[in-house]
Length: 215
Image 1: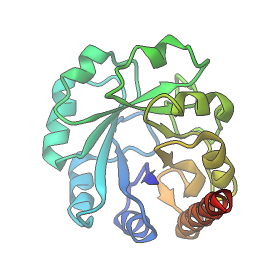
Image 2: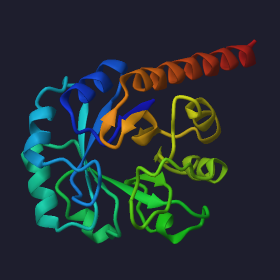
Image 3: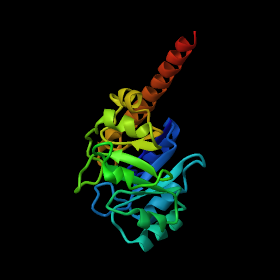
Image 4: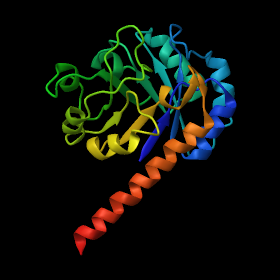
């Protein structure tokens, strides 16, 4: 399963996430976030990442020129849009786009407005924080969306609930921030490791169930 650890502000946290098994780490370039990081500092951290870990930049209603400039500076593997950006705006972004959608009903037009080629990140609706709230979304509703298209599940995921969340939703991947933190922007390495241990346990259980079903 694809796992992104978001809100990275320190090199040792990026290293811990990579060692635990993260496929991506996220840098928040929105100045209003408590997890904001300067692009040049983020570039220094990104330069230490192993080649199998993707750097993702998070932006909120910021000028397209700035987004593309930061994406070029860091050679971002993807840009994550967490504001009110439109599909037309996303089409002009120079990197692959992940669009965060405040999750409501399955037929919410904010979900349907995005083409199938866009990876959606389903998160809690919060017009102020724009993510990192620690609150979970409706997993049953999210599972219906995950059955139809590629999604990342976000919102209040922790080592304690991630097994249940993944079992219910079956997403392509997950995005975790506050659930593995000591304080905003400072990761708890023990919780990071515990998250991946829970995911491995869940994977073993899924394989056991598949094997039982084939007997």
